[in-house]
Image 1 (cartoon, helix red, strand yellow):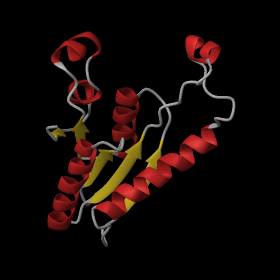
Image 2 (tube, one colour; image 1 turned 180 degrees about the horizontal axis):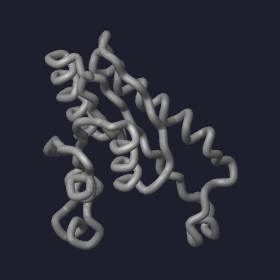
Image 3 (tube, helix red, strand yellow; image 1 turned 90 degrees about the horizontal axis):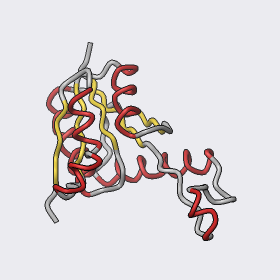
Image 4 (cartoon, one colour; image 1 turned 90 degrees about the vertical axis):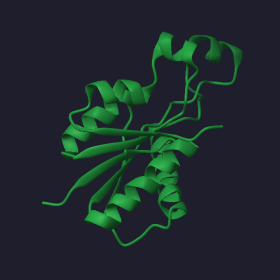
Length: 148
């Protein structure tokens, strides 16, 4: 059975760097790569909608799913695509829990993900997604950070 790697993609430079590292491992081991995007539902722009946290009237889960697939395809092409096995997954939910659930469901051997580098104060208050994933994942987690 070949090795399987999960790479969450959020569009950040750190996520792109994580994908580059996953591709290096893929070339060396013939691993399969699973790209995952967890869409963030946008907040309405009007004052009432923004106040209650509603999503825009024209937002549909299908639009979020299509945008997520487009983001994954762009990320894959930006690192050169390649001949290796890759699958795209767009799954709604809370990011850390969704990443861990997908890792479990897909039976991956490792997660390679970026860190947006939250400030120390903000990390203490809410914690980063990568920090949460590293504590509850069923497999090793490699986290990469690209300094500003």
